[in-house]
Image (cartoon, rainbow over all chains, first blue to last red; front, side, top):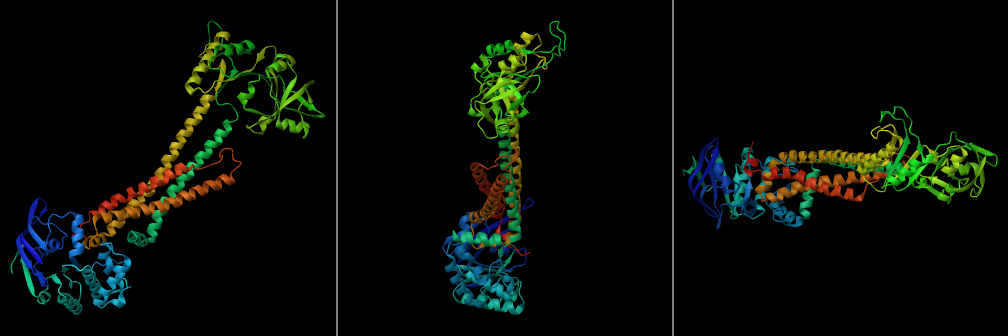
Length: 220
Length: 408
């Protein structure tokens, strides 16, 4: 599903080029549940941004499915993010003034789907994450675990090729983390490709494969 | 489209107090602009109305006294006008259109009719005086050349004079007594100059001079000059001074040998003043509107800054930069146009109220807002709104999702 070949990325910082990713090769199969680990500075955030089409890379190739992701303008990148990727963030990033169902429906708004249709689809997703009774609650009326469930529903609503989860349990206690991991496993069970970036080894241990990053290269 | 509009209102409704205050400043700005424009119009109408009394293209020449030595003549000599001066001006000043002299009787004589009597301002003039003074005949006629040729004892009286002496009966053809001499009333007039100007009576200058031993004297000469510019009128003024100077042996540069009231120049000055006033009103008004618009822009910037994470997330889930720009600009345009419209309507309403309740104010006459200016203002407002939104929108569009979503 994801294929990186000789991927390079460096940043200019104060006149010095910081080479973050060096000739990175990476393959993630369709339907795989993988984790990416690495200490801070290992390049895992940069890799996640590139995988999420939030950032461009300098050289190499990135294929997402059959699509070559390279040199996109903002407009095209936005369209690809909308169609191909579902994001889950550590701090949820729900819009505080929209209720649960509206938050879930947001990606469909950018596809120009009517309010009625996207609300209906969002309700299905909320039901799937077990929050159908909370659909009209605002984020600040929900617990951390519930917020992350809403975020996962939002990630799934557009039928993406891959779900990218950045420290999805980082802001949660261990019981709630457990529930969220269980939910991500459920999502994986439906055939979805799921990539989790984490620094917690017990989270990584629940994935099929762990990709360890150090100094911009895959160590294992 | 409907989606976008819903998003728009939700977004503005999120900070109702802030949105209202911002909208209020724009509304206030436009209200002030419209009010100032309306008042400016009213003031201009008021002054134009005052000038309507007399021909604005006229020059009035008064007798004076020399203050400069000239070819051996001493200073302090009085300059006295005679028929010959009148004829000379008529002959020598080409641009001259209508001309009249005024002879002042030594005393304001008593006018008597049927036991009622009073003293009125008596003016002894030529027929053209009617045009120069803006006298409007409402019955009978004004003086004519034959009255002057035959020194007829005819009199034209103001409406207030007629009302006082005749108490509603028809004065035309009646005989009134003026300083012991019977005069026949041939006309009644009105004057837009107000009631004081209708307490005047006119008799032929020739008759008056015969009656009051005026010989061929006159005290004042007034004439119109067509539709010349201020510069032309000033040139004519100099011509008049030169012509009279030659006849009476004074220096044309001696401003007090004869005094000239140049109404063209005066009216021109008033028009210039109003041009400046109008420009000033626009500058102040637009400044106020602009302050409101800058307020909108500022608030949108704050709003964009606050919504950095939101905009970042929207981009992450597929919002295009153009979509973000469109939304911010639309918010700004909506804020400015709706509030501006409210200000516009309030301003027009205020002007209408003023027009209704201040009908008898001389300075402020029929204040009004012309619709073209209002429409222009409204259109400008949409433009300003877009402008106000553009900078914040550009800022929003350049938000990078990665930075926006990075956990603090």
